Image 1 (cartoon, rainbow, N blue to C red):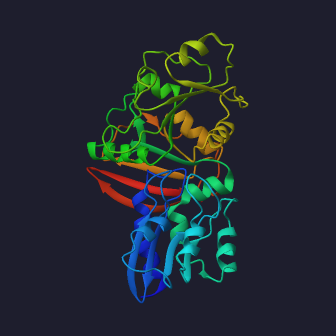
Image 2 (tube, rainbow, N blue to C red; image 1 turned 90 degrees about the vertical axis):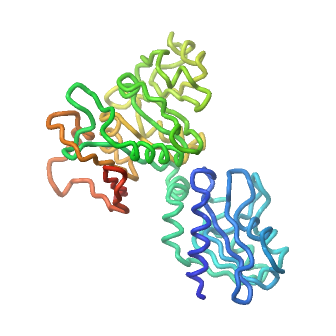
Length: 361
């Protein structure tokens, strides 16, 4: 077996941590000795043991002289768990094969240098693209200082997200709704505009699947949200954060915080609305590494216009409405060569619908 084979097994293990380890990356590890796999592990939950440690704990034979395959550079700093490089050194592992170098400045190449200085053979870059793609959220967060932003919406075949009267329930199938909840569970936060709250009164939770509820963020520039909406009435399953341009002297501040929700004040953009890039920076500073945007059209359009989106998930239902509300408004694009270009990662059927999962180039 070659290095790519074992790294691919480590990648499959790493993916088991999806939706459970953020803001940490998903990491998998495999230990091989004399051509046999003697240990496997992955990072199972944020704050718990890392993949390398779990693989060592699960080893079925003496690991001295073995090769450790790990999808991400082992950590070399004290966090919620001890440095992984220390236990690797203690166990006399002879060779380390690493998929991708960690972008965290507290780790980047330092773990590799530490291991090499101990005389351990280190090989890097094995299935590097696959390892980076698995942790695209983590790498984006570390390298840009902004959360990874996913836009998701359901539309009819002719591109409408609601009827002319604003009715959108339900465009997509039950299977697609379940998929949407799974997508929510994989993000740190879910963001909508106040218009979506007023129109649909969504819970913005993961009721249909098992998983953690994301932080609920409502962009409400004028702080006009009413207490009767579900995002303010029920803050037990998920916390709610209201983003506004108003300050704490506003009369509504105290009334809203009394519901258990938090309010964050963000500078206004040129249109007098919440500056979304500044909001994303504030969210990143709070440890939010990924944000799922579910609407409405105004928020989606603003995010696209400001080039803040990284991923687009479009659910297309086999329905035609004719006139209706479009998912995306005017982006001020007048020439075809100015169109926003995407790379389609995956297309699949989901119930009666088609889901297109793509990335912005």
